[in-house]
Amino acid sequence: MNRPAQDTRANRTSPISEPLRHQALAALAQHRIATSDHLHQMLCPHSTRQVMSRVLSRLRADGFIDWTKLPGAARSHTKAWYLTPHGARLTRDLPVLRGRQSYPITSETAASLKTSHTLAVVRSHLAFTQDARRLGHEHGPWDWTPEVSHAIGDGERIVADALMYYTAVDGEERRKLRAFVEVDRTTMSSERLAVKLIEYARLFRYEAQPVGRRRQATSAGPSWLRWYPVFPRVLFVLTGASRSRLDDRVSDLQAMVTQHPLVAAFSREVQLGAAVLEDIEEQGPAQAVWVPLGGGETRPWTDL
Image (cartoon, rainbow, N blue to C red):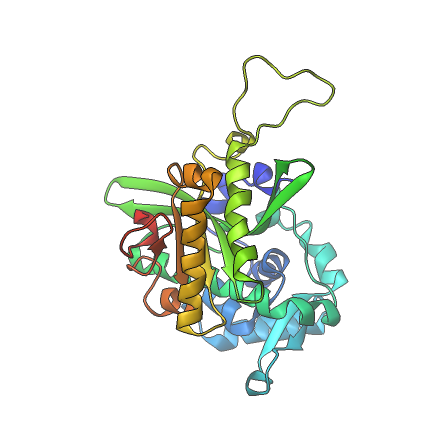
């Protein structure tokens, strides 16, 4: 199912009026796993950490959520929270999730398998959220949809780690921006990561045909126009290795843009960039930390 088709602008821009316990449940339904600190930063950054801790403790006592330990002995006391089956059923009726599909993790075994990658995606989201607050832009907890899927032809699909909605505000000017975000922890080969660019280039060109009908003489245009007025830019967020190794992966992404004709044509129409997760966390994604995959000096993601 193509999740963006049902994502409503009202849910993305309306002030959050749900009780904090409902927001926490919705955030876990949307992000699948998050730590107490992540939920605090996301939902109530101006409150004390104890406020979120009390909410999570009560939700666990009521049987709606549970936790697993983060991998690694140094973080063994940090809890990664996820929904129980009972909590997952409850979130189906939450207004803030209306029109969205969620794929919650509802067991400790599943949570332990997904924790590292899922939390890296949450960290990426928080970097943009905190930057938006600082700059007076619009990007909140519900402006980030994980695991967005689209058909690209031949029975294949591309699944982005996240789709981001972001409104940059400069006085009276408002720029509505969208981005597919790919978070790479250096767990796959550099070549497999670069192949993602071919898949996005295929999505850019893909035109679905009605089943059982001949190809229309006048095309309705590429399928992505059903969801986006402009094709979202593609942002790669890299982590999990030395700086030199991450630089090599960026170089491989740039080589794919240069060497693959479909990707090269795609790069002339869509902004493509890569940055290191720790850089966007420490400096902010609005700083000049993004490498344009088509070449050029580092710059903010909004200026790729």
